[in-house]
Length: 624
Image 1 (cartoon, helix red, strand yellow):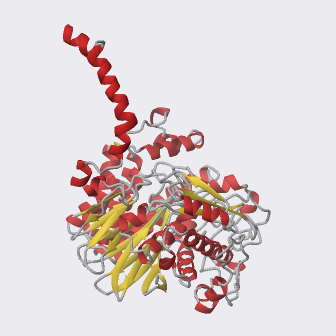
Image 2: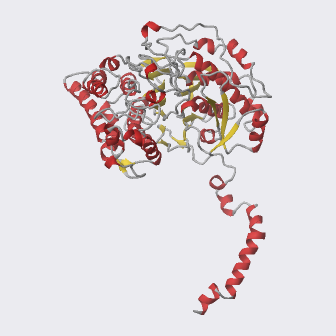
Image 3: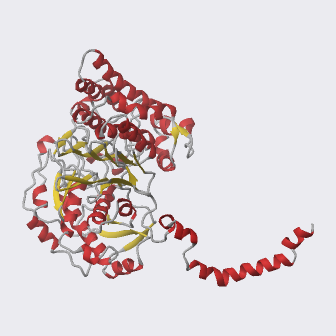
């Protein structure tokens, strides 16, 4: 009793309080100035000078970095079972459909940049569908083109899955869909961002029984961490596998069996069901829309930057050309000499983004229907003329587009032009996308950026398929102005910012990267490439470094739009004050909020390869 008194209310307690006060006012500040014994013993873990919060992930036999841990592990499982980067990519894609359904799925769209180490060649795949032929955007408002039964484009991504397996894969569709089917049937703990996205779309889902049945189980919002299943999607995947298996059992080759699954989706029973659902509910998709679809393989577009070869997606990606133009515009400045923390460095990047976007939004469209002057936009003399518009001492407004010297033609006879033409709401709709990069044991590399467009795409689950379509008809992927070639038209593939990148040097792989972020995709990739190629940052430090995004009001289609730069609030005071002094309208964003890069980087001196994952979202890198 006496001991308890001494230490709670007695003189010892008074002495203890005096010592606490003395420590707080005198000793603590002095201690804080000194490295602790723990910090000296563990400098990597404890050092205040560290540049990243996550470690670089080694993978001498293979690496996967994707937008969700279960998706990364699904890809790694395939690599460890003997599959290659193409096989693992489809496993990642299918799993993302289950664990990140707001961002990607078989009914979405996507772009892929693939390096085949055997042939030392690079390939670009556009898995992007067109707006339905029956679309007449002039009779709809912007929200109808964004969400609901009138919105959407033909699913491109599933066809891309099959095409990847046919061209470069080694495994069956059954092999690579197994992880996703297990998660869809048995469930997984639903992640917080998915719950938030469902909450944002709840009002729409409640008007659509097919959607509410999937995303509002028991007629309520899911709780973060509860077991979430998608049995209808699992059944669709199983039907596709059954078509593959029947073909194999009848003596078909692996290629033919994969084609049987493709045909079931786009020309068979699933296509019939999707068309019937839209017909019954007032939508515009018909079987002809699905039959017309084919994934497109081609050469990546390419530019050299400071001795590196940068390869990325051609149009209908606008982001690929944007990144290449931005790099070439700043190549004329000594960024390394200025230093990363110089506000002039960030200023030059911002000005390059403005110039590139002015051209991109004027010239890039569906290349099947329009002439896109890619070569002219990347020509050295043209880029020199555009670079001359950059003033190192002052920010420009949003400029007019340049004239790269090639004429555009609009093939109106191939388009459904519609009977009514009127401007739409000019505000662009944010996107919802994910990304991943993979390197296998043989040195093959995939960089991929799949997307649903906006969150859950159209928001419409198509009957009992468990599928939602990309809402590519929304303003942003299309122009709100009827005179523009990207105004939403039936049969036209809208433009996307998705632009996965592979960097080579002297014929050897250096880096793969991609990011979600809608309008910010090209900007984010541009900054991370500069971090690595100009400032020699390790992969994780390059990913985690503070970054900015340039926004336009009402949009980047409009010359003279108001420009705002949002910079993550970890920028230095020097950068903040310097950018303001240069005339930028600067606002602060949360510390880790812009984009989500998933990247793989080879150390060209040591020959080792590591992966990084962005802490800004629920991403994870894994290796073996």
